[in-house]
Length: 403
Image (cartoon, rainbow, N blue to C red; front, side, top):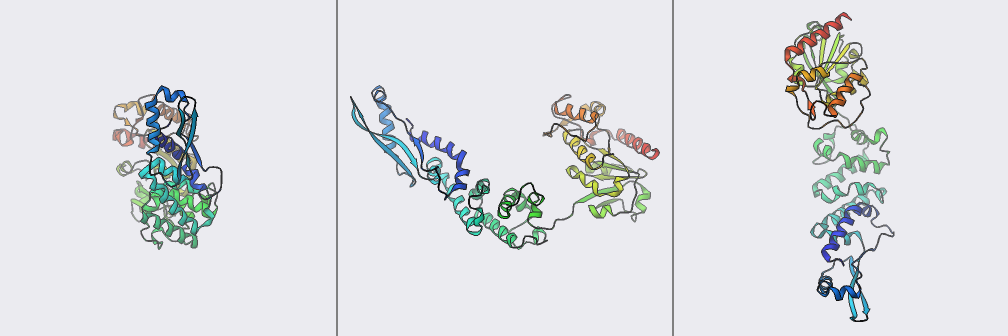
């Protein structure tokens, strides 16, 4: 025997699990409606055993008014030998998802209506979205965005639909209020809607890159580099610290003997002059850009990053485009020598295998993931005493010069 509050909780669970499917199917004929919720089928012994509870149950449903428009209570007359004819609530009939929302969510049911109204505007402009699963994926956005945000989304979709290959930068688009931050925080559902509108495969190249899907021009990735060798600096007009679009950096007519890739900017800025050496700084997960620098392909390459799981993940990326790159100061001996300087890595890489690591490097990576030397241990590269760093670097560079 479900009381109204129990029925609300039951329907709230049902709505949470199924509302996105209902949203996609909205307006379609099917077997989902009416949704029937049994309120209980007591027998005569229930009434005689606990008449107070039975009376509270009946009165609760008699007083459950006003009912949402799409909700009905079905009552049934029961004839019992000793108690005679009794009118009891039997089941709820919910004629639509809107009825479930109103019954289950109360004041929060406006989210459903708001999402429906906005979906109707989308479908009026792009009927191809009718019945598309993307509607379920963007339900929360449709339900929770403010009016200005939703209008901006419609304006963006409409403009890009007419101009699919504008070649403009994002900020050049004639959509009021549009900027990089707005698109970045909403890139998932913008991409989802565009894939649905243009029937793109999410696995295709043009179905994964939002800027490409929008037909936009992007600022070229930039790389920061220092030339630690005085002779190399002479070849570029005496410049030492450069940050350039990667293709411009690739065009430099230099031939460094060694290329050092460091994870952190400050580390690269602190390095002393070294003959034949350039240092590339702060690429992080974008380290694969090194593949576009032809002079790096012919140089001795070293990678020095933090001894943590992300440091090894970046090393793995670097070696995928520079197979000859060697790691520096990322071994177990270095970690243990400066164990007292370690901190805790906030989060760890979740992958279990990094195929481009050497067995020795992978052993350290596995040890970090398995907390072999301490919980989520991390040795940041700048914490290593600088004299030990420069001694190691000078030794590696000298070995490269002799190679």
